[in-house]
Each structure stands twice: as structure tokens, then as C-alpha cells.
Length: 146
Image 1 (cartoon, rainbow, N blue to C red):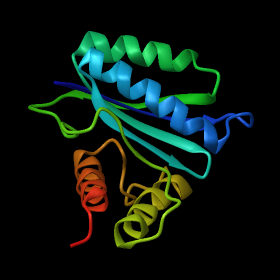
Image 2: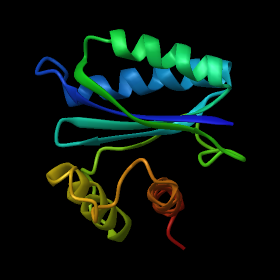
Image 3: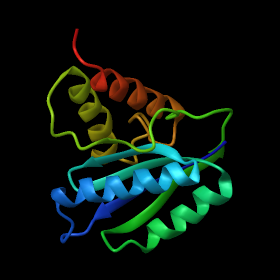
Image 4: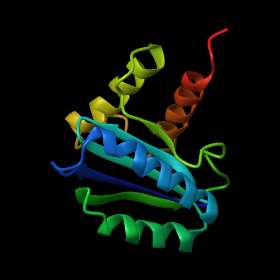
């Protein structure tokens, strides 16, 4: 399984209401391509984790780089993995607008990275523990309270 992680900045013309439309299209496309992953949107910045067949992921990344809704696209990392991290998500998503324990922790996690991406002690999106934590928190958030 191949995974790729990139970061980008939303253009000023990109609005929050555009995100749902973008996600709907991405989820349909990802399902057809056998790609899963997670998109995080934090204060105008995107970080996305994609996983699947290497050729398909790289082709999708090439398309993403041409998308005019964002700029300053930076490849953070890519690697081969044993299995999928986001197996149950065509595209998990979080925009950090909610407020619960999971969101609060995710805000701290991603905020520390964006505030000082050069700080080696900050949780880094290139690391699998970062994405494993994101997956666990988003899964917990999506479960209804009992």
C-alpha cells in the first residue's frame, strides 16, 4: 500500500461552503480508484493523507496539484505501508469547527504543527503515529454518544 502526504494553502477565493462539494466529488472518485485517506483543513491550510495503488495515488496527486483552489503545494512524505490507515473512509475530513474532546485534541495536534512546522518536537504529519491518532479521534467523533 502506497501513501502520500501533502500540505497546501487554500486560495482566497476558496470558501468553506465549497468544501462539501469538493468532498462529495473526491469521495466518489476515490471510491472508484480504490483510494482512501483523510483531509484536514485548519485556518486556511490543508493537509491530506492519500493511500492506495501507487500509480493511482500519484496520478491523483498530479491532478490535485493543478487544482486552482489551493496554492503552495508541498509534498511532505510518501512511503509503502503494510495496510491502510483509513480503510473505512473514502475521505475522512475535519475542519476543526466543532468543539468536543476529540476536536480539541486534534486542534492542539495540528495547531502545533502549523504554528511551527520546523520544530522537530511538534507532531509531524509525515509520521504514522500522527495519522493513527487522527484516525482514532475522527472515528471516536463519528460514533454516536451512548
